[in-house]
Length: 439
Image (cartoon, rainbow, N blue to C red):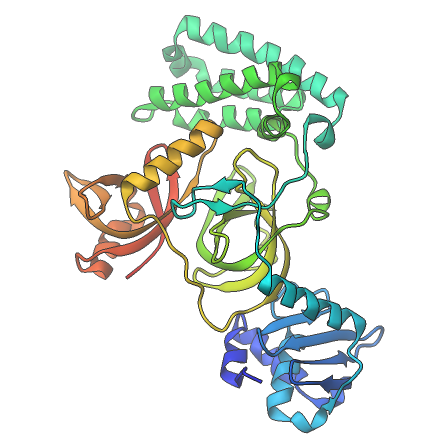
């Protein structure tokens, strides 16, 4: 056994979970406590069906049949603590439960498996990385023909509205734009084009701000391009059909995605951002994989003042499987399984120069012109304050603009001491918004 008690406790998400695990670490709470040099397992007693829990001592990896969203849950963590505090409660087990044996075999297979798929992506660190094969998604696998016809009828009205606006000039929005934008956005929602309606409503608070004309024109250009794609939907490649429909408002069911084989890796939480959108609270969590180089975005939504069911901390890492939404540039993903907690923090590389990052962004936009909030992980950059603006500069002298929300620039400069640091953030509209940084 290579696992230590300190390493086991370090896998707990918080002190509350650790305390509950300590309460579970009592022999009288368990039946059939067994183990071998590789793993331990046991049945946690409950008033109904017991929970089968196991710990892979070489991971460590955790498995439990309970419905908890904590990882590791208190039962699996408690089982591990019990081994250190009362190993006499376990007996050597020759007959491993089938579900535990299958779980360990899958973990071993993943540990030695290599991906030979020739498809590649470039956003993670500027190098080509393998991407797993995707199911053939198209317009009619994610929605119905009736829904598509309703959407096409809606875009005819929107196209007329946009062309009228261009003839009048967008300056006309300054006087009565709020009502006009609200009315057309409502009609788009009625036409099953909810995401387009949301984009139009998002323009209302922009009116009258500095450079609002440029922001409105950029958004209208993206919407018009989306309309053009919807009008010739059937002639486009399958992934573009899916991309355009989801951008317009079609929601892909998570249950359908979870039937797909995902990407297994050691994932680190690189950034977390929580924002309000009308009645919704939206959380964007960025993960990066050590072995695949993949960057993944987990999107969570809650209504009103409700809290999120699970929590992510920057710097947290785990071993698990993510399934990506079908896209010409797969980025958004959902967590399918979360099993292991490596003993050491993963080694993840970012872009070494601004030039390599900009080339990667250009390649993505060429594939998907609607791509926004792109992940940016830059190594060896220095925060620079010039002409009342903040920038990140690399060793070549190249620089990109950076937002200075809540004095981030000054905080980063204080940490860096003028020396190069690593920065992870979101890239949108030609500016980077930092989310985490370290020496």
